[in-house]
Length: 312
Ligand code: PMV
Image 1 (cartoon, rainbow, N blue to C red):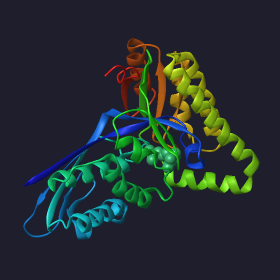
Image 2: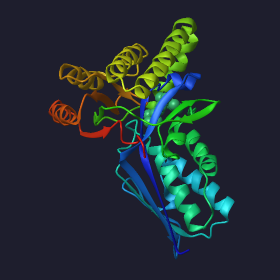
Image 3: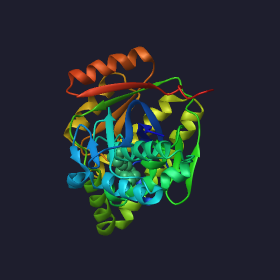
C-alpha cells in the first residue's frame, strides 16, 4: 500500500483520574469532539515528521516528542518498515489538557502503520505499542488513556485487571471546557505519590473514596440518574482538590458552572490546568453553559450527549 492512515479520538475521564493509578476503578470514554489523523508514506531523502508542534527530520525531533520517536522506532523494528518515511500528524486535540493527546497520537500513528503494512489490527496489538509510548510520555501511566482511545466504547477501567465496556445511557449532556493552561499530569501524579508516602493512611482512604464514587457514578449512568452522577462528580472534585490536582482556573470554571445550573462539575484528566467537565440536564442548558464558560475565560468548549452510545 502506498499510503497508510490512522485516526484516534481524544478521551474524557468522567470519574476516577489519579485514584486509577492506585488500582481504583475509573470511567472514561472516547471523545468524538476531538481527534488526531496520522498519514504515513515512503519518502525520498530522510524520515520526516510534519505536525503543528514540529516539522523536520525525525532525527532532529525534540525531546518532548520522545514518545513518538520511540514508538516509531519500535514500529520500524517490528514491521521492518522501509525508511525513509514521511509522517504527517494533524490534531484537533489540545495538547496536555487531560484529553489524552499523547495516547491518541500513539494510537493514530500505530493504526496508520498497520494500515500501511496491511497488517490486520486488534486492540491488543495496538495497545502493545501504545503502552510503551505512554510510559515514555507519562512515567507511570495507569493505562486508562491508551485503553480508552484504542477502543470505541465507554469503559470501566481498573489497572492490572482490565476493562469492561458499557453504554452511556443518560439523558444529560457533558460540557467540556479547556482552561487554556497546560495540565501537569506527570507532576501531579508524582506529587500524589509523595503524599502517599507522607500520609499513607489518609491518602489511601481518599483514593478508596474516589473509587467508591466512581462505582456509584457508573450505577447512576446505567440507571439514568443525572442528579446522582452530578453529586458524585462534585464529591470527587472536593477530594481531587484536597489532593492538590485542581488549580485556580479550574476552580473558577467549576464554580461558574455550578452557579449556572450544572448538576455537577469537576476537573478531568491529570489536572493542574487542562480541562474541566460539567453535567447539564439537557442540550439547551449545556449550550448555554458553554457560552457562560467561554465568557468566564475558557479557551474552548465542547458538548457531548451522554446517550450518544446508547442502542447503537
Ligand atoms: O492528563 P491525562 O489525560 O493524561 O490523564 C491522566 C489520568 C491520570 O489518572 C491522572 C494518570 C493515569 O495514568 O491514569
